[in-house]
Length: 344
Image 1 (cartoon, helix red, strand yellow):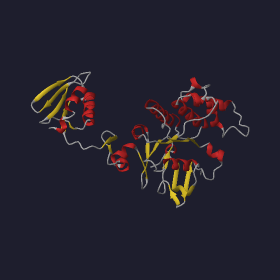
Image 2 (tube, one colour):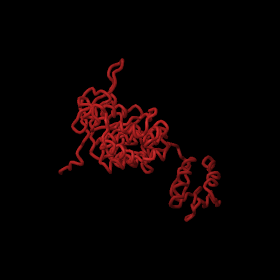
Image 3 (cartoon, one colour):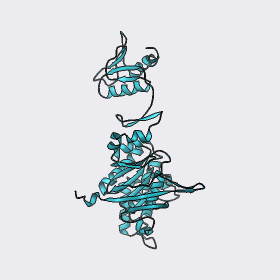
Image 4 (tube, helix red, strand yellow):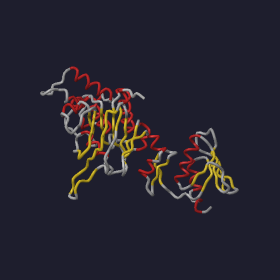
């Protein structure tokens, strides 16, 4: 099969070993040689438990951390020996820490992304200014162009960081925890922005994250760091192969493949039947599980619930052995049965 140029690997490593020198000698981080590749236009989430080596790997790929052995290739350049300005034209990086600059406007901060192109005196021409304004526009910051960066919200500061990398105009962008300090709406807006950039400009974006749920929803590929290797798969394949269970399950928490999310591991011995459909059924199912019931989607002899259909509120009938009790709110149902799991 002939592979088109658009799908060729533009990032790859061969037996990459990096890490830290301590009093006990060299400690590899990650713990194994890394062989990995990335294609043009992919949004890639780098995930793994704390200490697995996500930040160290990103720094090694970007030339900010020394490589002990092996090769790193970013568009035919090795960060270890490439010219600084040449490499800055193919890869840009955004760090974990929020932007901290004093008395600097959004425009001026984003313009720092043009340093590889600005010449010895750092002068910006009309083309540079056009690229800077376009980066500000793409990240939705036009209304803040003249604002002081230090006075922005955390979400806006993160957009400023992304705008700076866009102004650098590189085909590859790395982000270390780009949503670490953001609330849920801003987190998803930032990730959606990254997704749009890969689709619109065919940039390859690699970002580390602890938000597995978001990564599974939006990433083209997942790089999963485990104790023995780095897996490179589409999100659905990781779920199907059970890799997320192997990588993250603990006695207290496990990955639920049906919910595609982590749930608490609890001993739910008391069963309760539940019938219904749609949103009300799903919400009731989660609520009954939360208070300690093993919910099955059918009637049980001693205890079961029927959810009324076509209702804006959750109401229905609770059957306890031979007794039927109507309820008009979900909270009312939960109060009635919360302690029954210890009695039936």
